[in-house]
Amino acid sequence: MNRVLAAATFGCAGLLALSPDAWAHVVAGARVFPVTLTFDDPGVGDEISAPAFTFSRSGADGGTGPSHEFDYGFEFDKTITENTALILNDGYDVIQTNGSKTEAGFENLFITGKWQAITNADHELVVSLGITRELGGSGTVHIGADHYGSTTPNFYFGKGFGDLPGSVLKPFAVTGELSYTIADKGLKVSTPVNPNADAASSAGVVSQFNTGNNNAWSGSLSLQYSIPYLQTQVHDYKLPGFLANMIPVVELDWTSPASSPSTQGTTWTVAPGVIYLAGWGELGVEALIPVNKAAGTNVGAVALVHVFLDDLLPHSLGKPIFD
Image (cartoon, rainbow, N blue to C red; front, side, top):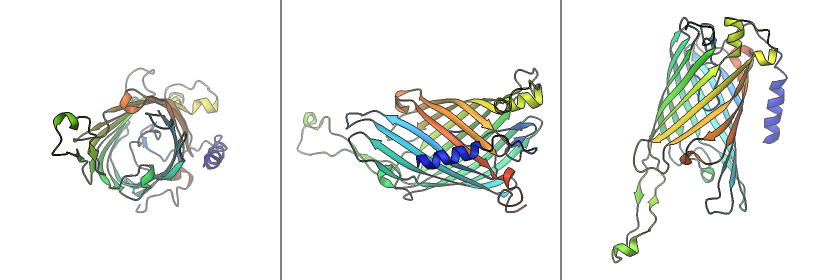
């Protein structure tokens, strides 16, 4: 899989010199919203991520040794109409634990229907609504794919600062996503009880959970500074081509249980990095830094190779099914 990642990365890197005149991706006025690395962008488009690579490390926790997880994600977005799209997400995970056999397998398949409900060019605003269906049991159980599925309504937004006074603020933009996941089967807990045992002997008995899941809230925000916007809409500083297409970004991700019992507490993760944005697509890399213990204790990384089919193939695969 590492060879596949390298081939895709270097193959796309060969296109860095291209600079098409049109930007057919998520656009509101002069603003182009890039695809963020830890959550979805605020609009719809014809695009593909292959791969979205994530590395994470977890501690030994009293086991045989620390674990290293390598996730190779895949996403395909297909517009149905100009403002609606169907999105497929899947991934292949490799988990290496010191002293144990390497485990590998597929994640569950996720299918999302998405509607770009509002596009305001003057205020560089995009608002979308979506619903995601997880197909339970479609992945490999021994690497953590859930037996049961879930349904998740989603709210997305993007707002550029180009309508604010002062040239310093104009290149900034924020994007976000808020979701509520409803599990098909609720998580339940039971504690084996010996009716002949006293309270003292029952102390310390470990509770057992079924294979269900708790409901959960999740949210994400990104703060971006678009150097392409600075160059074209504020002032052309004659920056080198590679630097002129950079978008520094910081993402913040949060999850929190919405039902009881739950197997994990509230998590916070911050992801600083940079995105290279071109007409054909983008390359991105970010660190994954846990903010609290529930999110982990080790820094990970995420990298993305993303292609805009609506720019490269505007008259075939990159156009809506129904014009």
